[in-house]
Picture 1 (tube, each protein chain N blue to C red):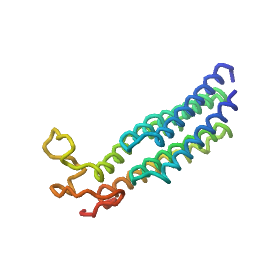
Picture 2: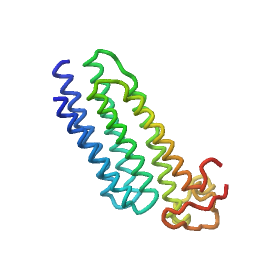
Picture 3: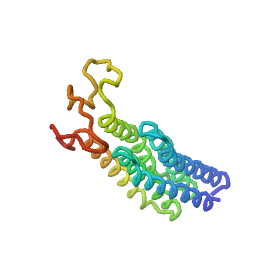
Picture 4: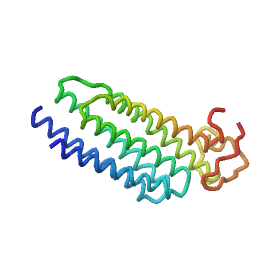
Length: 89
Length: 134
């Protein structure tokens, strides 16, 4: 039962990543692209955690923590650059 | 691993997958940035939270040990999602909204987004970063 649910969740988040990629490619503005990239990072975290459940190891949590932190910092840095033309003033 | 625990984990995984998919579908479907912000920041965050809770339950019931890594990721995501949404909304406002169109603030200091261009009201074109004044 968990195998089927895992396969369903993998399919959902994979499709979600494709939809985000579509928004990155066609998004009319820079803010949309930043938002889509941030969502891609979050979906990648979900995929990593799902893979960790599938493999039964805790190794992938370190990777997901790293993804969470770098995703947050890069999103804020990009938005800050759009706001001020500079990241660290 | 009991049947009940397995059913709960499987149900959480399915619900989380649906939430994640709905969040990203909303990102594609909704008409402009201010509405698009809602889908990923709420639905996708909930979807990832569901996956992490399912993982926690799975480890606890299948291996008999309690894992706190997931809680760390969940906490971090739930704390940072509103901040990123606020930053993206500010970046969008900076390029698209005129200061005159925005409602007055309660403090008399004006909108922080336009502090750099106060009085100028220059509207940047799509995606162009503002001229640095810092």
